[in-house]
Image (tube, rainbow, N blue to C red; front, top):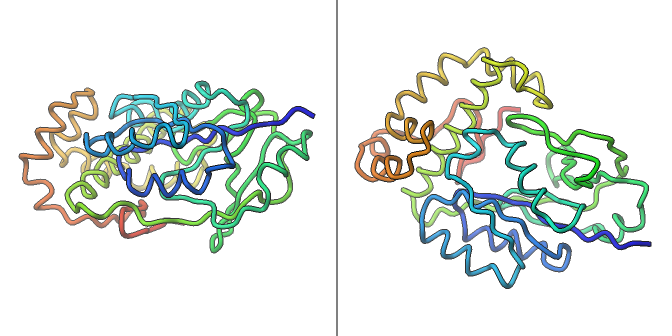
Length: 269
């Protein structure tokens, strides 16, 4: 039997402190990490770079507005294309293996399966985020799902836990929250404007996007040069605006749209 080794796929705009805890939990389970570098603050990139050798990280430097422009599935498919292994497992920064049910053993003992899921200790959703990239790919502008010739395994390979994002610097946390808002709202607006872009995104999100369409557009416009910089890819404009405008002094970071904000998880569903 040919051993199926796993490439871990992750990406971030920051949160390099908690990233180490995520990577540490997968140490010995995966043999490489493909990291999508969308990092905003240089000190976060320096910290992330310090993990490179210990966790065998293949860093893919991406434009800071890349997800904003092309959506989540396109970014994830780009990252899995750069993996050395066909079996790829995607996890978000701050997620970790709370209980390993024998990830490697399960994957290698069931060669007829090409898709595997993990569960959460509290939530009931099944996350099918581990699959053979040659047969399955990501689909959807946001809340993306794998699609292809899936032959799923019937039990979870591990239980996932959540860690709090980096809260050592309230300003940086607020900037990352604002970036996340812009990314999500822009994808939701896009799937209303062009339904063909929906792909695997659940119809719930399409209906939600239609209901909140005008509100999201208005809130994006209120971000001023931040939003303009995300649209144009002008990082210098973005950097100057977050440090000179009054936006972060005037804005309270609570979302009626249920984004998972740093330090305060809020879910729509």
